[in-house]
Amino acid sequence: MLKRLLMVLALLATGASAASAATVAIATGNVNLRAGPSTAYPVVTTVPVGARIVTHGCLPGYSWCDIAFSTFRGWVSARYIQIVYNGAPVVLSPTVATAVGVTVVAFNQAYWNTYYRAYPWYGSWGYYYRPYAVAPPPRITAHDRSLTCANGSCTGTRSTTGVYGGSTSQTRTCSGGECTATRNTVGPYGNSASRVRNCSANDRSCTVTRTGPRGGTMTGTRIFNR
Image (cartoon, rainbow, N blue to C red; front, side):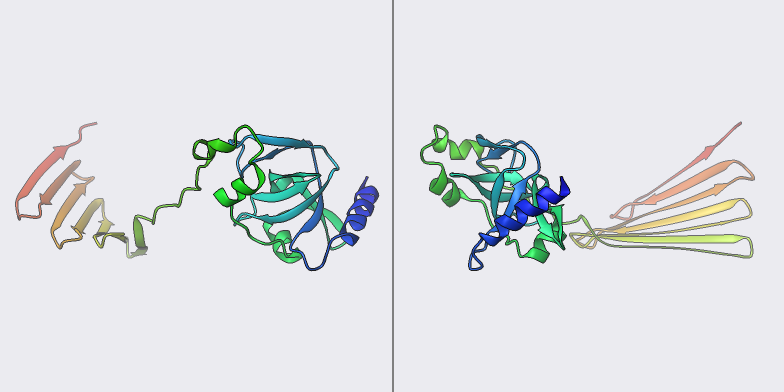
């Protein structure tokens, strides 16, 4: 089977124009050729396993690729595309695609208008088209943490800065059955709030003092009975 695949791909490669951006390949399984880079798009035709296909490019990330099969044009998942790389047939991956020069292409309405005017679903572009969502920026832009222990005492610190400029820092120290944790938060407009918590294993209690952005404070103590 491996020898046959190598022979088929080698013969196909000899027929490809060096001037074109296309890459000859074969289909690794029976796969639906879609009118767009998603299984939500209508099926143009079915590409049989072992069929000759020509890859014209892939989306960024090389997840879906624009291919030609017979007289048809459409999109298939890259995992159904096999080419010869370093003398062996391999499934198209981002590394392989970059190495063999598979170009990055876009999918848009111009593509749809070019290839699908004769299909009954041609007028439904607005129904099928779903642009790939752009990931929102991270809500945390900086984060740091540390821990030091010496002479029976441990101190841990951590700090975080948010996307809008606010920040929170916390320091926690434990020694001899006593722990103190202090947390300070500064909002994006400079308002601040804090919390100090002291817990003791000796008297089984925790005391918390909170200070709000306007200077108000609230203190509470809890006793833990076992």
